[in-house]
Image: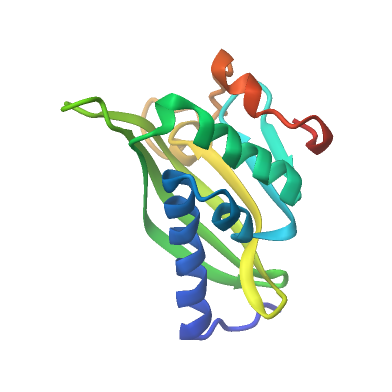
Length: 171
């Protein structure tokens, strides 16, 4: 049976969700990696083949790749409507996620519209991401709407993302 989460636990989890976005969007590679458990997993399940990074070395590679990509400057992750529930492993969360890209003086581009499915657990006395799955706002999440099949909608991986792959992490 899952335990109850205290208000302090919920606030600490929300802080990690925010720190992830701030670290990624400001090029803070170390801060990004610290959001994850030592064996933490980031799974980007939007493409024909899901992309996977596991462990701090692979996550550091991911964050460094995006920091060093010139088109990343000016990117902002907007994470809202987070639902946190206790589970046997620690806590689960679901959040809306949108990524905006600054385009000179504008108008700016909404680049990603999706959601996160997270698993958090305590490591070293602190909450951290054990697994984050990034999904597009399509497919199964919309199955209740008329005209939607609920089937997973996968798109080809954009070629520039090839550099983000980390061979020892299964991606």
